[in-house]
Length: 348
Ligand SMILES: *Cc1c(COP(=O)(O)O)cnc(C)c1O
Image (cartoon, rainbow, N blue to C red):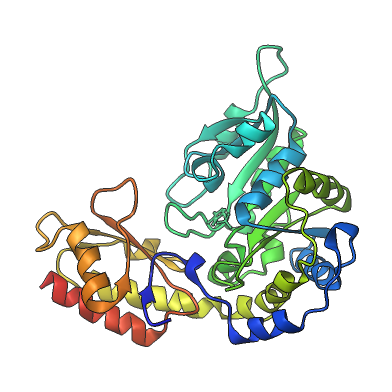
């Protein structure tokens, strides 16, 4: 990449090893269950997360919708965070496509939902109410800073969910970032979950795709849901081949991205007109604000970074002076130093 692109880890290109694996992948018709590369990706993903089976889907959004539609029927309710990707950024699909009623509770600064808030949100048996079926967590929690959620907390939610006969889904788009940040195997972070979806296409650099994992029975039902969403793919092994490289080689290097995020955050904290909470930088995201007295407006700051330095960084939607910078495979330590130098000049 000749630009330094901090907008998201979704911008990552596939690695040369991925392109090579894609070119050489054995394929078959995956709707018939005959694509060996897809089958391998699904089995390895499930094993990696300690579940029985996996399902390759087009996107993280499709993984979450497929899970919600498989766990819930029309008029059922799912409990999730107000800041959850599933609530904010998935086009209202669980309601639009599945008639699922979202019941939102506040996300705490550490990315969790309060157990008491979940407990209060669970409906009693009464004909006035929708039926509660599902609780959804997000790990790492993306909109509030890429915060990893611990296994101990997730176990508590799992116990609560089981006590009420509900299911637990984890939107683990960046679950391997959480695993790296907490130095805990991903399977321990999701042990309490009935289903988990994770993205191959973010920090793991695959060009397309996510995997949904769960029990054999759940995945069998989810396969039908995926088909109904138009997500049954044919020679998808071309894409799954990159996914295999992603889970085999890219999960182990995410700590490098986190170290780069720390270096960026420490450099930013030392600049004038920047406000930033270093303790909130726990994975590959850095949130910071430009102060009111900064010599440039947030818009000019972003424009000048792009025009004068080939650096992409966007004001964060919903805030007036906030930026989110995301580190990933295509951002090196030298890029961090270059970016800090550029921002120092703009803020001088
Ligand atoms: C990116 C993301 C998704 C959706 O993934 P897409 O592949 O972009 O559809 C879901 N949840 C979280 C937390 C994400 O960050």
